[in-house]
Length: 258
Image (tube, rainbow, N blue to C red):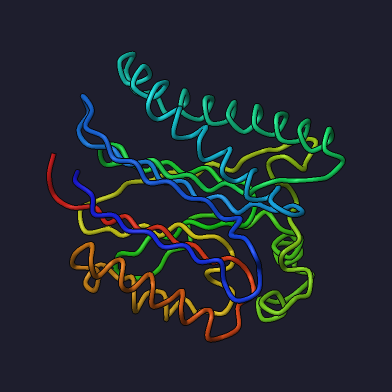
């Protein structure tokens, strides 16, 4: 599998710093080309959220460059991947919470991570950053770990109420600010001509699923220039609609090849 990639991140119209961080890495391996994408949305006073998200991104980058090749040498095992990503979350949660306690503050970050290897994809999610897949339509691959999503699942509120709920950004857990963090894992098959979009929550609050599909559908994203231009377009549209959060999106399109 080959990949076309693009990403864009913007501080937005209100905040002084961009606390989102993202990573896209592609490598040639004994199982063909693989792609890792991670988006983190940090939270905390001053630069603490920026530090939290950047720290987790650096940890995933280090894992991809050192631990992941060793895993492939042993023979790729999805259960081992889940264990290693679980360990990253556990270690980073302890590290960030300890640092925040010493500083007398709180800090944390969401994580949505995607690994494409062979004809399979694997996703881990903590918080409310999201992963989408676009083929013939837009598919949401992750479930927000938020109070509002829980209330929606329990039938306490309607979908329409959830979109404008005043607590829609309240997380059930995040890395660095929760005593216990339990990531969600997802997976499935992937074929050439599929688009994956990973984003922070600021990207999708004021956009409709139809608008995202219109700009990110596989037929529209013919090359990396189109991917970048459409990512920028939707982020600027967010800002025109007065989205106040940081706004980030990463795109991966799979292509035929080894």
